[in-house]
Image 1 (cartoon, rainbow, N blue to C red):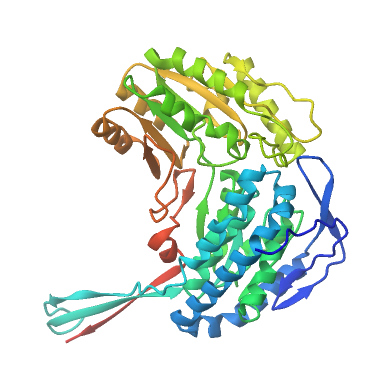
Image 2: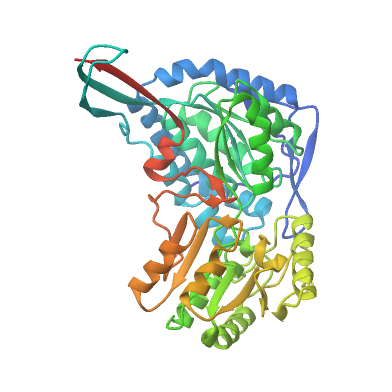
Length: 490
């Protein structure tokens, strides 16, 4: 492990385009949400920079797509090795720009998981397959005979990877690694709030030895650059993680070019508790909304649908837990709840809470602004909620939990499905068969039983407004391919 990288607010940063580090005419401030101090000045790319990156990725595509899977895998493994050595030294910078607590920064933002996301794609996997021959009768199309076919997975082409602010490096890894493994070239556009760690990743890509133009990185404060990527006919696919509203705009902007999309969008995670659920176990999962990156995670179980007989016990336990969680300086080891990423996000979450109270929800705890310099919201619990409330229907993306009561399993399922979202849901019950039945009725791309831990190779994505397509594992590789069938008659 290298030495921890010093944070220099005056460091000059550049874009990675075509294997060259390119300066920009202007920069914008990256702010530490924990202190409101400036972390650095990110290059503010222009539409011309975006066009140059697109041209670079397009020019590099034929050679990269023709590179053997073994060689592509070797480069990904080399990148994983570089990251395993260098990434821990980036933790101070990434922690400062994301506002993550030390524990989250070191284990989730730049920990071993980052390198592992690349290494898992370093072993080439042949996703091609053959179809069994089929007897075909004579027709106007041709004579009778046996028809065989081979189905090949081909690269989509140039992929724009547009990522969210909550886990900037890990989000990029989840897109870049499978896209490169399948022979695509990429343009990375990280969220404007915390792009500096992604620029460091570009240096690791360079050190690993990827050919120029295979990976390009653009940073910008506004929407013009990502819009240029989405609208370009030379960008064949957009892989996006972020809000459902932005996802809808991407679909509209890319429609004229029939741009392929992979979207992991918003969520309003339902956690169903039956009348025999272990309240203590469920409380630990639910409280992760508060202690894990301050609820800034789309899979968080923020919408608790609890059997009426358990509501008082649940609310009492969550209230007690909230009082035990230290809200404070994210650089202190014992802090469990850090800041939200920006002043705008803090204000949005506060308005969300006020709206819930005005609609009739009971503010059990939280809601106030702590006396801290950063963008903090204390753990907040709203009870006596009903399905039509805005706080129940929309994602706060902050440390806010809402509780609804139900009287039987059918009602619980109906409440869980009464949502425009369907990304990740949870079921807590002492009866595993009962939990499985409930899970199968929930309209959600992922459901965890008596746990908040997903399987790392299981397809991940959402129903309804929570996304299009699936990533992780084999599904994540297939997402970055086009399917070509070649048939013949014997």
